[in-house]
Image 1 (tube, rainbow, N blue to C red):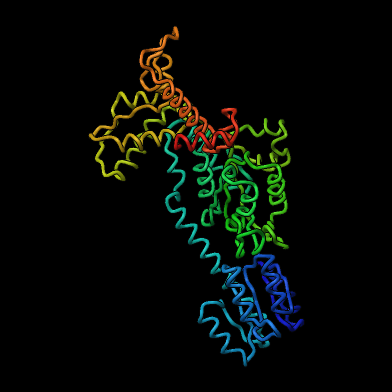
Image 2 (tube, one colour):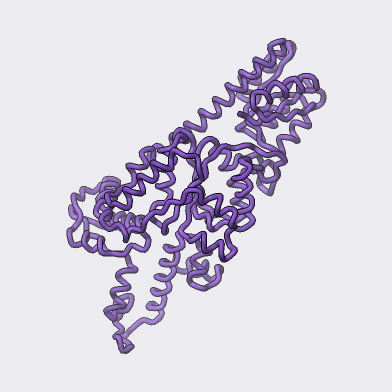
Length: 463
């Protein structure tokens, strides 16, 4: 069903269309002048705009031009009298109007058909966009490379929960593949042919996150030159994935809770609400139950999201998957680098399987990609990540950069203290960014320094 604006200076036509279209399940607003229609367009987002051509002062062609400017995704249907016919035809040919209908005894039925055509065309356009975007992830369960009992159990859980319409919350450390799980739930669900939209809630400040999720209308803030649909509306009939949900501010949590309860969104600066049908999947690498106890996450939102909790095990708890993942990433990156690497060095593979992988699958993938880029032979040799090497060096009494410091604390000759300290700082910054999934404010908190100091150091070390 659509959100529709009807504009006609004849009140009887507005009333007739309002009654008939409401019976079809559409949300209808009516105005009796072109100026009022323009004001409505400044405050709301409509799927379809129906306007008479001949009206005093601001006519339907001007409404059409204005709608095309501030709300280019909206379909515009012109109602024409006999003497307006040529203007309507020209408007359609020019690409501004979607359709035109002559005023006649069959006006209501023709408008119903025109609305259905417009909404079907919009839905098809959104589906095509979704297909193109998700083509690489269409077989998402196959994309979860695993052979371990823990991951096979997770796949079965995905198949089970996918058939429901319930909200899902995915728990897991950074880099475990939470978005891959969310995509798999979507692809295995009845909503598979509809859009899958994802957003990292920790990557946006509060005001920008609100406009991204709910959309905005022209003039809502500086730079808002036209209406924009929010991600909830873009995901209508499909799924929206809210990654790092724990990073939302309490104010945004209240607004999200209302959307989940009311199943409608109000664009920033808008005056009307837009009904939505969206499945919500959220994810976090933090303990929401603990955050509720600390009053940094709303308890009512927690219960709304935790209808079906799903946990993704860390890589260290399913080490039997590491050889499968290594070969998967080798097949992915070797052809892209135009290299014919046939296998992985046996000793290197054993070392990879013994590593703890604090960054999980994402860290393993980056490690293999780097190794492929540096390899010159037919057998892949892989160095363990720097954190492991530094931990080994510290245990053996070797300083960063090759300088040896014995357990007694005796310094070697010629040691460069500034470089030594800089290497430690860089290592700590990299580790904090890895643990915080790239969210700099959280990384700063982990290191107990201010966000401003953290940004200065990131810039200093070109991270």
